[in-house]
Image 1 (cartoon, rainbow, N blue to C red):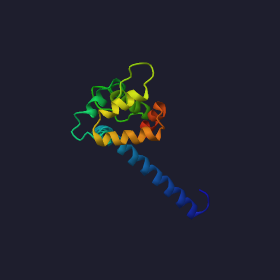
Image 2 (image 1 turned 135 degrees about the horizontal axis):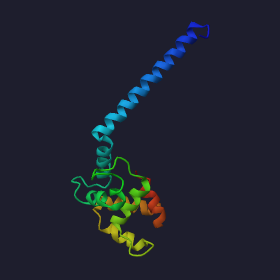
Image 3 (image 1 turned 90 degrees about the vertical axis):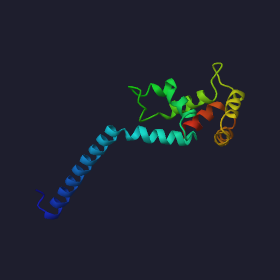
Length: 144
């Protein structure tokens, strides 16, 4: 085609490798969707992040939260959760807003009710956010 056997061979190899990679990627996506691997891995990750190994406390409340429940159909667990939805759901579970703006005192009172190891994590995030609730939401969203 181009008059050079080496160039024709290189173009052919590139085409074959591209085609194989597309087929393998499509097969991977098909298997992942069929076996629901992403949702299972996300569940394990959130369970570890919220330090609820039995998945009966915070994890249950998290997956029952309307922001999270709306992300999947047929009562299945979602395979993807946007960081903002994650942060808002966790914040609402830890410290439900009693007014239009959640105060730092309400947040600290909610953190005090968490297990000790999770309290430490949240206190570090509050300190990192310089005691600003909006920055805390951003920090919490960055965990995922």
